[in-house]
Amino acid sequence: MSNQGKIFALTGPSGVGKGFIKQHIKLHHPHLEQLTVATTRGKRPDDGKDRETGIPIGVFLERRNGGTIVFAHQPFGPEGDWYGFYAEQIQRLLADGKQVLTEIHVDNVGPFKTEFGEKVKILGLIADEMYLESNLICRGSETEEDRQHRLDLALKETEVIAQLVSQGLVDSVIEVNDDNREIIAQLALEKMNELGLEEVNSFRVRREYE
Image 1 (cartoon, one colour):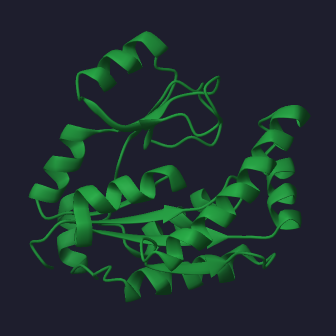
Image 2 (image 1 turned 180 degrees about the vertical axis):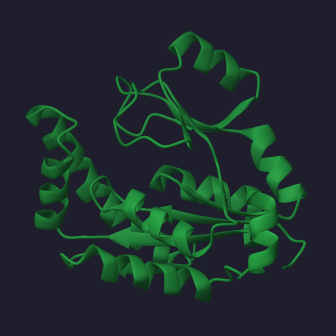
C-alpha cells in the first residue's frame, strides 16, 4: 500500500444512507480507519465508535477556539448542534500513511479540499425527495417538525452537491434512489475503488486487528 495517507469521504444529505454505505465499504476494506466526529448532539442508538456525542457546548467551543477541533460547523443552523473533527487524529493518520473513511457535510467539502488537496477523495450521494423523506421517517430519531426541517435542508444540500461536482470539488457522484440498499452500497464501493481505495494484504489486516 502507498505510504501516502488519504481520506475517502462520503458527502450527502440526511436520509441518503451514508452510514449504511460506510459500513459496506468497511466490510470490504476492514483496514480503513475512521475519523471521530465530535458533536454536541446527544447519542443515538445507531451511533458507532466514530462518534463522540454529547459534548457540552462550552467544551466544544473551547476545543474549536484552541484548534483541537477543526472543520467545526452547525449544519442545521445557528440553533442546531455543533459538529467537527479532531485535528491531531487527522494529522496522525495521514502522517502514518493510513487510508481513512469518513463522512463530511457539504459545507466542509471546500475546506477539506483546500486543506488536503489530492489527499482527499469525495464521493457525493444524492437522492430525490421521496427517497429522502422515506429514509428520515424510517430512522425515527426526530420529531415531525425536525424531520421536515432536515428534509428541506437535504434538498438544498442536494443542489449544493451538484454545484460542487461542476466545480470539481466532488470527485464522483451517484444517485441513491434504488430501494435495494445493497446494490447502492456496492456501487459506492466500486466508485471508491476507482478513486484510489487500495486493497491491503489480508495477513497484514489480521495482524493489525488482532
